[in-house]
Image 1 (cartoon, rainbow, N blue to C red):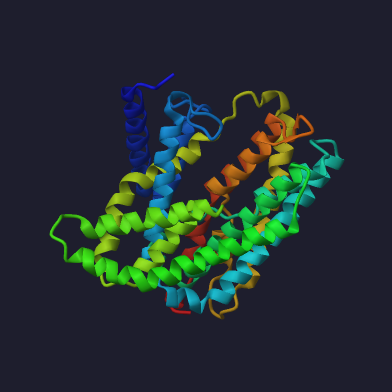
Image 2: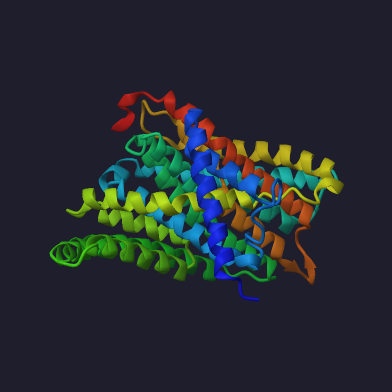
Amino acid sequence: MAVALGVLLLKLLILLVAAKLAGEAAERLRQPAVLGELLAGVLLGPSVLGLITGVSFTGDAGGGEVVRFVAELGVILLLFEVGLETRLKDMARVGASSFLVALLGIVGSFAAGFGVSFLLGVAGFWSASALFHVFVGATFTATSVGITARVLSDSGRLATAEARIILGAAVLDDVGGLLILAFVTALAAGAVSAGALAFTGLVAILFLAAAVGLGLWIMPRVMDALADLRVRGAVLTGAVAFCLLLAWGAESVHLAAIVGAFAAGLVLAATRQHAALSERVRHVADLFVPFFFVYVGLQVDLRGAGAEAGRIVVAVVALLLAAVAGKLVCAWGVREKGLNRYAVGVGMVPRGEVGLIFALVGLTTMVQGAPLMQPWEYTAILLVVALTTFVTPLWLKAAMRASPEDTAQP
């Protein structure tokens, strides 16, 4: 049944106003605005007030797909904004560290998640399926760059070497995590081809190289031409169109759209219109980005978990420790001296939207006609993803405060 336009508009109104009010309250308490936006989603969602329903990854009742699209657009614009504030030459200076941080984070998180899930299965707390444990480990591999980027942006730390390492590693994390997801999905289907997986990885690398390489050659000329047009907003329109083009391209080669958006920002940061674009895109992002974070909060649903409360608590505590430890070890990958390695490790902790997507795939996967994951097991994993998302803003803000001011240059 089609949803009335008035219902959709009312939901968007409630979400936007609640996000802004909660963000203001958080900042008055000297906390990141993103924390207030996340909590606003929890309060409005099914766990507390239940004012906004049908807005989840598993259904589109009540216009949920429309709200989800607005939220996805928000995180795309956020990563576009972050890319605009990031210079390629600065990323290159910490490229080796970003790669090592991402590699250690993926390996450490997968090993910790798989290991703890296996022990829980042996103890009889939940599924003993090896494939189930693989999905749990895979869920914890990718970092939510959106959460960390927002905290770094709000605190004025995007220009630091630590931030460049975190953002670079998070993008690599996303690529690696999606390759892992393709692998475990193929396992669930009963067949996997090493050649097909290698081809997927090659396509992803070629896409990023082509997007940035061709973009740096073409877009400066395009943006100069747009700047000479008389129509209002030509430069901003062209920039956003380029962002959407690369986001679409990333999705087409089975990467996350946010990877393409970040690449678009990197390219346009090298144009003469960079300063004006940064200011204009920031205004657009201020409108759409809060939808994403309040949307993440809406995914927390504690209803019906009472029957398995004991097992959920045990699983959440054990997996939360594994999820945090698996990312903190990546701090060892920072090669530059004098940097705040601890802050880098903390910045890689949140799983956010990427973890939610991984968990959802596990929930909807069928193995020989039976669901791989039970609803209460999904709830436990979802809570771990949510907790890593909620604790990071406060934790990262404190960790970055300890970073010396001279870390702006590696």
